[in-house]
Image (tube, chains in turn brown, green):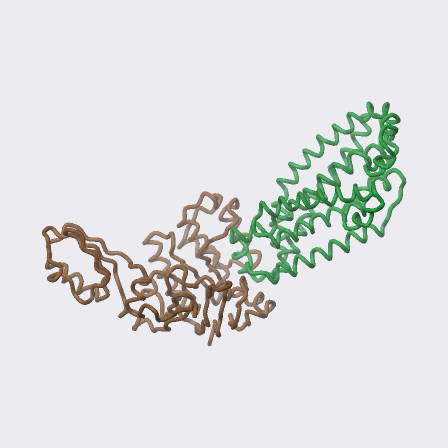
Length: 298
Length: 260
């Protein structure tokens, strides 16, 4: 069953095309990743789905409701959870008051259960919350009425790694119970970890809809190594290393190969320090999908 | 269905009680100076040209009814409280757009129409509370200075002011849905009510400008006519109610059509 059907969704602001003819479906019971660099147009798509902004062209169906049919869309929202990237809570309310407020509009039968997993300080005003606490409160309000579909925009931003893991695990359990998750993110590794299928958006347009298997082969890590002695780049560099920068006895590169092979390779050298992190998604996309694959301006 | 109304009503409590306290203080001040003014009332009435006295609504200044409807109601109720209603409703939507509160609110099964109407309806809190405070203060205060105020006339003066204050709130609501920056919407609300109030005053001075005053809500609410002369112009009150409905409809149309 199709939970979200997006058909030619286009949003223009003057000459700027924020979404260009976006088309894809999200099926029931999957975690669909919506992956793209910051500013690619992910939030624009989501805000159109929620009826917050109107498409210039095209349309979409959310839980069977055409987003242009305001009445149907409003009714469908009873079965929707939404975790925005920017959580606009009423800051002087306490966490409990904010949850009570939303509960009166859509129920909160799973609130206690969620509070065992995610526990922001509910008796304190939200204005005193850390980014992580704010995000946890957002997760609780998105799931507390047990909706069929949850749309999450950068859901792990602000969460510490432990809480991120907890969320990922929680999402897997939820999907096993039949929920559908729309997971928008600019972090390749987390999408690879939790999603079943992925829509890749760049400069406002869909580049590819991929199964997770093919996306897994398109990985990348931002690596920085500092050698004890000078090492000639020729002996160190491999084909999997792109965007290489060298300085003295250090090298920074984006690694596009398999992780174990990288570890084996590094083991042959005498290292002083190493740093491995998530790369800029745009660099990885350039590598895999080419530079000028999409030009929404034309 | 009424979660937003409940929530917004609670939000009104703090500022309403602050303003209620201020209203008590100002009213007592007005009443305290009345005995002194009563002595000078004739000279005062003579000092103002007829036309100006008419514009300000000065009639029978030596009676407590004339004094209240000539001084307290035009300045405190029509101008200050009118501004408060427009100011309050001007931040109902505009503040929530920028802070993205509407993104969360509208992810609930609630329509944009309902958001506008429920937020507007929360004005019942200042409407009821401030009217109650003013009534009690005026009745008790008059008694304290040895006067008896016409209770029924006072009730009608306050009752017929309700449509006027609702129009002020609806003007604020339009600014609230049309302007994204909350400070701009609030400043607009203050300016708008003040200018309309001035416009009505000027239009009464000069017959050439009389038509201009027709768009001013204060044209349709005359405390002196009610409290001093006992003229209850129901048509004017109904006009204001229709005005409120029309302005709210416009606000809803703007809000429903716009991108957030």
